[in-house]
Image 1 (tube, helix red, strand yellow):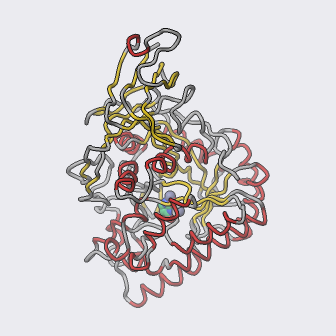
Image 2 (cartoon, helix red, strand yellow):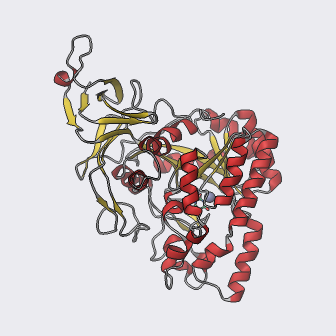
Image 3 (cartoon, helix red, strand yellow):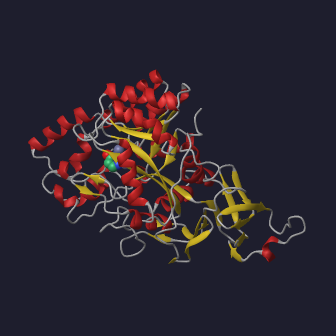
Length: 473
Ligand code: DUC
Ligand code: ZN
Ligand code: ZN
């Protein structure tokens, strides 16, 4: 048994920030105590095997990124981070758990896709990991398999209203899957964009000769996102399935979600840092083919329409439940450049698993969200939303010792040549300066990043068997 005592820091939870010391025994937090206090006469600081001085810094639960795609086959290629490179980058950025998507293409058995994802991830992860299941072919077999997966700790299922011919589900299929999810208490995750109409807009844009990356954004208009979000909410209402809408970028879609929540429906929104910081005009509209770096779906939205500010506001109101990255990285060379002259062939995705904690902390510094909300959306609510609480997402006795020591007076320069551990040949946030720094990262009691050095291992991360969502109203 090995013990570590973290002292002098300020523990931040969803309800406040307090000077507290933390004792870890092996992989678990065993005590959280007022500084200088003894427990039954024992001086925990003196008896610990290791001590970490966190003076002047925040002590927060390890980040949980509930939306990643390592090695995902997509758009004629594979996401460029493997579980090994992607989870190492996650560790560098203070994320100690990811939830990745096992992908079922039509014709495959769900159980086989899960087995394939286990095979890819096992022994290759620096941090802990769980899986959601993408159902690309809703049929009797895959619906039946949902209950098996729930029993195995895969309790959330993603469907697509976009990508006809690839992952697309009809409204009838969505309805059926939601009926099964409601029965099981499982969470339905939705990519909410009207893919049928979008495909027409894409064809029309290409026929006009509008082939640059910015037309990816204009042909995935906000109306397509709002309409699909509303439709998903209605189907969820009818079936009583809990619904989690992934990567929301349009303020109008969020209005739909906020209204449903106001009516008491179990509907939740996830957004991502790219939709808070980046825009259609500035990034997707960059000269030449540069904008391909920021081709993702849903797309970045025009700043002139005020989406970014509204998204921040909805984080404050609580109608955005979590911030995940949708980490789906592709290199410019040999991947994004497949779409030179045709934006529809650019693989959709942005990588940022390394930067979420920093980018969201910048929101605290900029007065957009509170310190407590930062911990809530990045750490605690993802744990509750996806059935991992209180093992994850909290600094409390009995929880896994997943802890980040964060310096609010530190500094992080984002850039390929500076702080970049993802397997991408560019950074979507090149040149961003963050007023904070991830100093130390502890995953199940083991220090994996400290003071600019990596001490993790490829085999440390283990599969998290999740329960049902604990966030339902
Ligand atoms: N949706 C995702 O969630 N990730 C990558 C691409 C997409 O469309
Ligand atoms: Zn999606
Ligand atoms: Zn995704």
